Image (cartoon, rainbow, N blue to C red; front, side, top):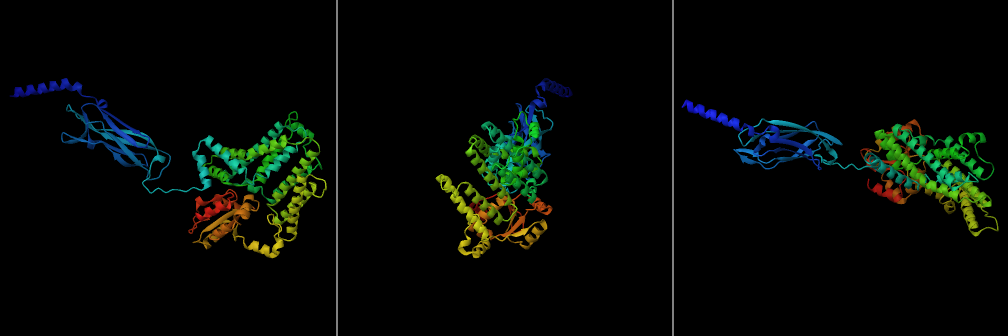
Length: 575
């Protein structure tokens, strides 16, 4: 009997040795994997060889080294085999992820896969664990917490465009913004400036040179906007606002008066010949330096308007510190603003009459336009009644120049002169009557001072503040009410548009009276005023900020730049 048992054992051992070569090595029996599909789901599983099966309870998956969590796992069906739940076919598991922490950007995930299986030939393998580092785009994942839709203001939306858009898209977008801004009053005063600068070049001006001078002017303007914008974004220093001080305005206004008298023929403005010889090459660059200086200063002093695209670029620079991309966006926007000016400059050069009587007439007209720009600049710092008088006197002088009292004159020229004379005379009379108005100069004839009082009574009542402390006091005193905070300055052209067009609209005034109206006066650009602007992320006026009843800023409702009455009324109704 013992001999028989020993024989069976030897036979079994011999059989096992003969069949041992048929068992697969572990890496042949099991081929695990893990990958990420287009839906940001993790597909994980084990490809098993023939006659190999996996234990269902030994096939596990978990995540580590990540803030993401496992939301759901889809597993294939199991079968019962030798009283165990197993996978006879290669199982593929799909893991859906969740983003409970609302993380952003690309996230790293480590998938830990564990499994154990056996061969149908009677060999069971050891348990195995594999780790797979993967990357997940969190923006394509849902969140387990309720989704909060963050409504962006127009400024923030533009800043987000810079962050998420390609360089080409950003530059083209801001070029388009610039073309739109070219139609605003901020750019209009530059039209007579560039035209006058081109015409003042005198004889020998070709279309080619007019184009070159116009490009130099616009490039200098773009450089100025870019430098000022980058500085404002990085340091919160509004270079344009700093240049709106009275002495700067008076000085620059005087420059335009000097240019005007030069065009009237009283004298000729030009650099000394010795200096021209140094900065020019054979005379080819004569005039370019002056045009560049004029373009640079015009951007900073003549047209310091803040609009949503400009503010968006400044917000982007301030948040990211990326002065390069933000500066390129500002430069592209400035070029867009300048393209129409190039057309104007080339036209001034191409259609400039030949020397003679007509040339004298054209030069004089541009001189008048320069005087108009000088008065327009003075509007920023002097009383409106005085500028009304100056416009009136300029108009009367222009009408006389056009021959309003001449008997023999072209009918069109005579008609223009008469209309201008009547209107300008009415402006002068309105000043003398104490009710100066550019729009309704003869309104004093309807009721004298009563009319003025009636107009004054229709104005909105703003509480004026110039510091954070003053504003906080007003806010606390009006807790529980809706509050409108208007950042404004006397030198701000768009602010005057708001005042004269939007805020004077009857429907807008009625709706605005539902708010507590506060005005942050940043005219003098003092340290307190700069601190107030910086606290609320205002890079320059006009900007309107809204507070809810709990004094919380409704950031998505912020308005930057001029808005027409109908659009502003709709905006107010949504608050």
